[in-house]
Image 1 (spheres, rainbow, N blue to C red):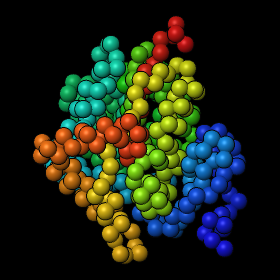
Image 2 (tube, helix red, strand yellow):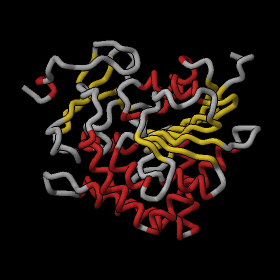
Image 3 (cartoon, one colour):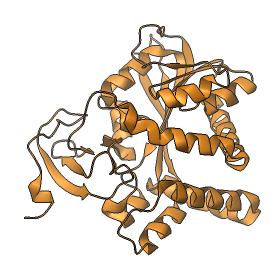
Length: 322
């Protein structure tokens, strides 16, 4: 009997269409949180084709996120990594400004981690606040006097129609009810407000190459979207939102080579893979020819929607249009 044949009957329903019919595609035994859950089982919905984790503990487990506290602290204390993040944040804000006729003033960063984006926005004159479920990350943010609170997007203290921009950097894949999440976010946006989210792309080059060794597969990630699925989701299910941008970007070449070249049966430490990726990013941004090559690669990834990360931008429609 293969590992795929040994799936238990405790499968959750599809996070998008609620179907209970699914097909097993991967059993991942060596992921970076295998100390907490020895293996994770990945299935594909036979109704809507979305890929998701076969079983989920719906309660928030803080120990699953303690990994991030060490990674966040390491990233935040690295001036080179912080500089790269600032450049990325600036590009994001400039891109977003193109999709709205009014100025962006109030920003909510959902799943804000240690508040790096919140801090960047405040330093550049925006009214920005963050919410986060990891107490370790919130402590790091509050130690720097940032307006970051330990709360959920469903908390009642968040007022409807009050934010010009809501951002979710690699958050939606962690949520067991993504449909309710997007609906709630739409209600929090002001008229013509923007929703910006990123998430790993299941249809990426990396996933095709690495298959079950794709490092995105682990116990904290519940739903694995393709860009096509997210685009269709926004267009078909949320009449108050207008999809204005869908693209993919980046290929983590350093991680691909590191995983494929590893002869050890144990997974490569995530911190080491992150360091390799950061080193490659610094090399690219310091060389004009490599930057040009990256632009060309990003264009190809955008056209084929096979980049590592999906980027979605949606705009709140005027009530008269809905």
